[in-house]
Each structure stands twice: as structure tokens, then as C-alpha cells.
Image (cartoon, rainbow, N blue to C red; front, side):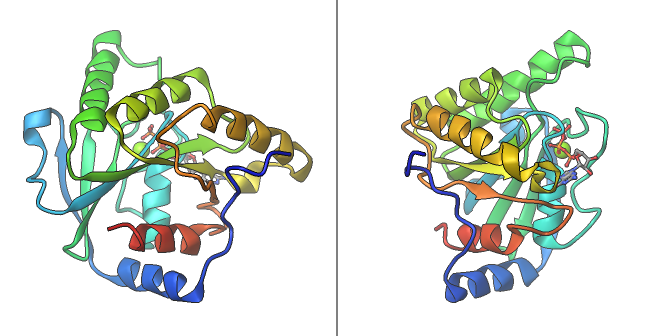
Length: 216
Ligand code: GTP
Ligand code: MG
């Protein structure tokens, strides 16, 4: 087993507490953006959640903020169709992105989202870190690699979150972790620690809050 890209499952109490405090603060929906010129002023840092459709981006935002209906989530892939901005503690934007790799919408709509997504990921000056969510059962797919290559080129640090950990069987997890590490080792912008989450069970949520609180 390679030792690079360890999974970060524990963290210093101080960081956990900072994360808890940050996410206990007010969090509000700001706006849904459909074109680059609709982005809010880059007057604070922001982090975003990217990933294939249905991977659990919106649900993770709800779990982190402990507000069930804040970001609209759904069983139907392609739920999030705009770049949704949330203000946390008046100090940070959390950005919920439309999923990629979703083929079941009209082609012109899909390509419009994809263009916007790519423009956003490669051209947002105050974007401090992109969290790239990958289903823990499926590992990294070629569309994920495309997005990660785009982030490499744009020099946007990205950190992988393996989602839906409640659905993975212990015996399958090492194979997936190894596949993920192999892929990440090819990306210069990959943050050297992997996160793992279950929005269903709450696993990993305090650690992800702590990671976000530590970004500045
Ligand atoms: P798009 O907006 O379409 O790109 O999807 P998304 O990535 O925002 O996914 P969303 O949060 O809407 O979740 C998709 C489905 O996965 C929903 O049915 C969620 O309830 C489910 N889901 C999300 N996170 C978890 C998790 O940690 N565990 C389990 N078991 N299900 C989850
Ligand atoms: Mg969504």
C-alpha cells in the first residue's frame, strides 16, 4: 500500500472545535448563478464542492451546516443546475456546483452547465480550495480526472472527499483507496490528504468542518 495520500479521519481537538464554531454560525443562501458575470464580488474567500452528479455535494453542504433543506438535494441526478452560493458566518462562501458527467438532460443544457462549471473552476480568483467528491464505491472516473486536470492547469488546490462511506464494504475499500491514490499522484494540484464522509451517518463531518475552518 502506498503511504502518500493518507485518509484524514482524525484531527486536533482545537481544529475540530474551530470547525464546530464556524459551522454553528449563520449560513444563508445568497444566490444561484447561471453565468460568469452573475458571480458575487470576490470580497471573501470561497470553497466549492465539485463532483459527478448524484455524488452527494448538496447533501454534504446540508450535513456540514446541519440544515436539511439548505442546499436542494435529490435522488434524481442533475438536481443542482446553477452555481449556488451560501454565505457562512459572513466570512466565507460555500459554493454548491452542478454535477458533471450527467448525460440525461438535453445536450444543450448539459453543455451550458459544463462550460460554466469549467469557466468557474479555472477562473475564480478567490477560490481557495475545491473539494472534489467521489463516490467511495466507484472511485475516480475519467470525468473526474478531466476536472482534476483542469484544476491542475488553473493551479486550484483540490482535496478529494470519498462520499457515501456508509455504502462501502470494508473489504472493497482498500482497492478503491489504492485506485484513488494512484490517480491523485498524477495531479499536481491534489491536496495530500483524502477525506471520507457519510452524510447519512455523520462520519467525517466534524473533520471536514475543521479542514474548512483551517483554510484562509
Ligand atoms: P447533483 O446536484 O445532481 O449534481 O447531485 P449532488 O451531488 O448534489 O447529490 P445530492 O446531494 O443531491 O445526493 C444524491 C443522492 O445521494 C440523494 O438521494 C442523497 O440522499 C444521497 N446521498 C448523499 N450523501 C449520502 C451519503 O453519505 N450516504 C448515502 N447513503 N446517501 C447519500
Ligand atoms: Mg446538488
